[in-house]
Amino acid sequence: MSKPSSKEETPPPFLGSWNQVYTLVLVLHALIIILFYWFSVANR
Image (tube, rainbow, N blue to C red):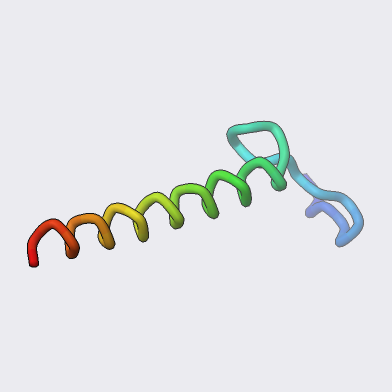
C-alpha cells in the first residue's frame, strides 16, 4: 500500500470531514472552559 501524497487527504475516522472534527474540538474546549468557570464561581 502506498502512502497518500500531500495533495490527497484521508477522511477522519468519524464525522465525515476534518472541518467537522475541528468544530467539535472547539465546541468541546469552549464547553470545558465554561464548566470550569461555572464551578469556580459556584465554589467561592
